[in-house]
Length: 299
Image (cartoon, rainbow, N blue to C red; front, side):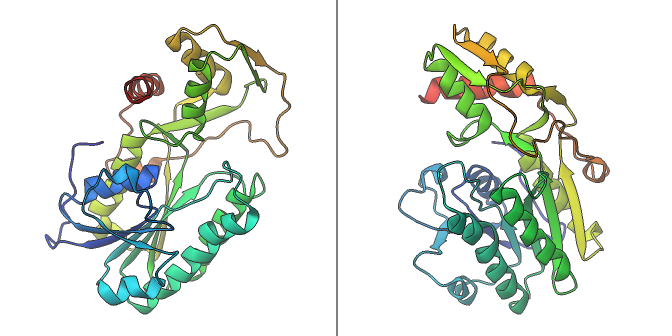
């Protein structure tokens, strides 16, 4: 996790609500922001908050509590919405819609009624029709824009996030796991897709940057692209992982067709963030090696 802490310019401790606080991004943000702020969390279930390492965050369950209770018991200054379902673990359409659109839609309404000063949304660069995940994320983003006069919005559009502690369904982690399991072969697309992968520490530092520059954000709605600008093909990335892991798994590039509406080049302009002083510090190859090392040490 990044070592820097966040102190707001007005020098008063903020109360920050993070949805999906036990998630990959949510947990990293919680631990770093809690160094100088009061952080509370929102999760569907409280049964296994394994990423929080038994830390003392107050976490509310959307399964057990009404959202209103969170605001009755806390004076919340900022909401960071990271909770999401990608559909990678056989979640049905209703679950995806509930987590990505319906719950945050309700949360936004309550935030406005309780005069929360800032709502930070974690968005995707994917086209809306690539998947139900992308569609529901876009639908919520459009509601954020519609209600921008009622609450200030920061919309953070993330390229592909990865790093130590990501879920097993994360593309990089999934490939590391499959390569280490000594599968004799892995069927793949041609791998010509160019992707921008951003290491978790760089993503967290992007959130820190926009929060530290909050006083400079005068517009009701601001969108930032969190991108490394380091475009490499899927074929190169998987081949690099195989060589780094020294496995004999055969990579069958071209044996699987591209999905419908496949994005062949994911490229985002991160200028608005770099103008605030942010820059990605971890190259993809360095980040992949750090992720491999973490995987080796924790499996």
